[in-house]
Length: 499
Image 1 (cartoon, rainbow, N blue to C red):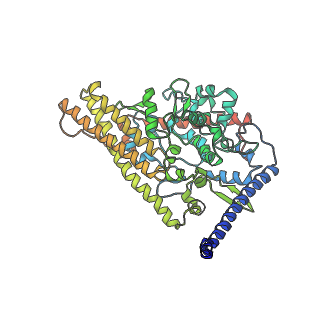
Image 2: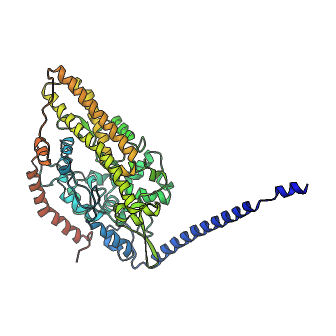
Image 3: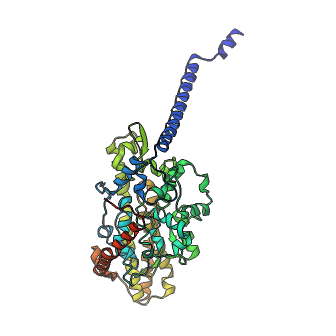
């Protein structure tokens, strides 16, 4: 009996193991409690040290500097353009110059005029002014751009939505609100002014989530650290009537889900000038593709990598410079990963290089397919003969554009990125094969003559663009209209006068 009792006694090593596990759990719980307490203390300190009261929708970012100088100072650094990685950086790069095939892919749409890589949030308004895509309101040939184009560019947008109503805002023109939308993306876009809690200021996101079966009111704080970004970094379209902003999430946040939505309602952004294919122009489905990647699946938020925490004088705050994590690997990637900076940087570049290999192939094949389709029309192809070809072109371009329009997709979700591009390449090949069969039926055997589109200028000339005229119209607009808009905004106290 005594032997049995001894055997049932806990072995010494088990007791020590339980002891250390218990100590570890208590330590981690203590760390969590300390972190929560520290965060509450930081919030309390910020709230108690406010110099001015900010209420309502305050679109002037400079006003927030009084209460939140650290956050404001880092936000102001989004004006910097010095950072450069292997692929892009914080300065504008002319993508059409790098990739003239894209001019052909967007023939008949404003993106064929001008497409540059984005800069920081401080440049949001001026970049819209300067873009050839917005044309000139003084030029009747440009047509009235809708006010909806402003939606992601300024905290003045929620102010105007509150003032005149959401639907009425969308119904306006871009030029009619030029004197109101003057402050670049900033504080009120993401924060409630009284508490500085994260908020969703754009109804399209709330409506999009609801259409996909999600409730914004049930989202966690960590979810909100991505959803604040998802107000703008998403795929969207404007309804033909009323230009109401819609996120096509009814079938989920996938490339196929968006395509199914657009096919169901028979939507196309434009008809391709060469091939006559009904094209869906993907915007920038950053959030959707991010959600397909490993970081999102592990609960990492956009802010964790693009707005890392900083400490200064015992105060912990979020860095609002919002830039590539590669610019600050020590505070971004290495918070979780223990590899060296060089190893982590090369890991990102490797994904980007592999993704660009497939991207290059899609752009070349798809541009040729559009040109060959135009040649088939010239030879007398019928609607019936071209029907399947136009669908393949639509599907190929949607996949290419969905992948490449998303900022950082080759890193956020490299497997999904390659999958989407591979499908785009497949459909471009199929389209070209079908075109060759149609041409054979029309009596043409052999290669289709290809134009010289080796530069942006040659490609634009080929599709019939007069870029010098576009630039002249834009200069007149910048010299005469924009100054009046800004003076009116200052007079109405919607814009802080710079010293």
